[in-house]
Length: 300
Ligand code: GDP
Image 1 (cartoon, rainbow, N blue to C red):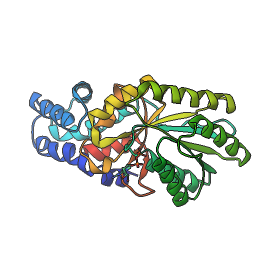
Image 2 (image 1 turned 180 degrees about the vertical axis):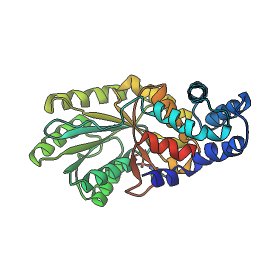
Image 3 (image 1 turned 90 degrees about the vertical axis):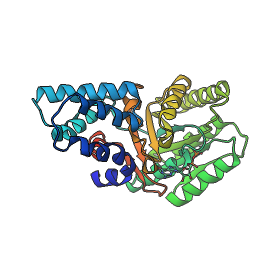
Image 4 (image 1 turned 30 degrees about the horizontal axis):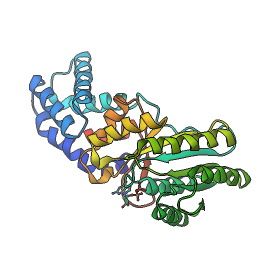
């Protein structure tokens, strides 16, 4: 797991661990070290607030452990960062019985469809029965793409034609999921944040149908954020939180960016757990989020 994180987060690691490496080597622990640490955190796109809070936590740990040499700081950074990332629980919620319904939301291009394909593959490998629902009926391409992922992963896709009512797709998916004994239903949704009122109405209707047809659902609302957009992703999280009750975040494309630090303020400032991270375009390039492995991968 650690190797996978380390390889996938190589670019973010360069920003932090390698950048700070020279600072830490053979230097006494003084204020300038903390200043450089804060700058490195900001460079990794953690934002000023979280960067400052994290440095404070490292400082507290150093005091408590009476550490005087800067070379011992990477250990403390890992400890402080994984504590901060553990503030929210990253386990997936499952239905006690019957299918678990997962809504996947996010703006177009963030990696929603790809993530659904990867999630399908992940759960299929755990011998779960997986069903996909193409409830982004706005774009014909979105339906096509989900069908392609369904084929690649090896599971069925419930779909209607373009322009159909997304809530009707969810309704059908729940009936199909029940009759086929599905363990998990992964639903793609439209991501037109430009039209917030419309999106809100659409998601509200989906919620209503889901709650009625499958009490307790949706069990998860996963927001997919493009990690390469850094702080912008944080803003998207804020906006989506106003529109829908987001229960977890998937940060994609972390393999291609030095902005992996964005994961930290998502948890610390928004209080939403990061549940998965995308580390590539292939079907198995999705990892359940692990606070410790993440912190080790970018700090050491
Ligand atoms: P959607 O519009 O939100 O459904 O986005 P897509 O799933 O179509 O993804 C948009 C692009 O991002 C595609 O080219 C994907 O291959 C790419 N992508 C998605 N996730 C990842 C990831 O974790 N890493 C990389 N490198 N590319 C990704």
